[in-house]
Length: 302
Image (tube, rainbow, N blue to C red; front, side, top):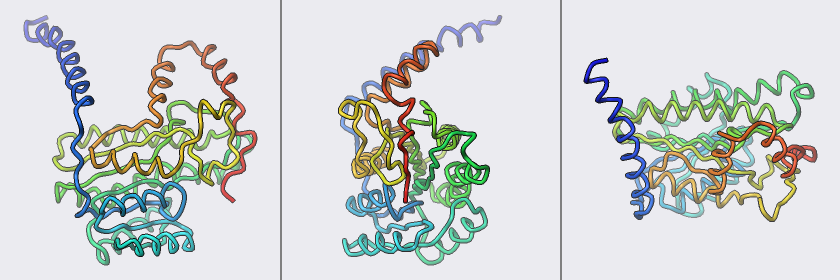
């Protein structure tokens, strides 16, 4: 072993410690929040649920333009009118993110009619709430195409221009279920785990790209139509998040260029515990907390 390799081995843990300390100091300091007055924000699944609240929050924080994508025109139109009445320019387009050709086509229309998208929020998602054997093949494919592949198509459609402008942000509304799956939502958990890997890779890949960043949001169960009927055993200890809270924290994370946002903060502990606890202990925790059966009463979006 030469001296250069030996030196690198000795310095490596010192570098790690330095960056941990540096990050800790940054956490204690107040974060600078960038203005959104020049930003053009596109939100997939923007007609209802978290997407609707995200549109409202971006408009509230001064975004120049808000663009909504989705599959249900009634919801998109209602949200668009609400945002427009608040004084923010808003547009909506029918687009199924699972359809690659449709995404590329509508992206071109957006650029021509509205302008360059500078903040892309991948929020569109579906969940069927069934076990593997009870879920039909088409439903399983639909989950993967919307929750995972849709991000590939939207990001490929808008990221090149962000890189060219050296200005942009890609946001993913993920879920803590990507790191702590539960029974009865195997399609959703799998697609969100893939989505998280996509964002982790993308975030690292953009480190040397000035002006372009990423934010991945991993919330606990959120009180929206999509997870209607889901029940946890101790709602007082683990209350469902309000969609407006998720929206507020997400927009703030974009403004502070935060790479990963766990909601609530206790989800950090869950991820750490899972990394070293034996499987038998994790199974008992799932049973005790009720996550083992929380999807038994699932109804979903009507």
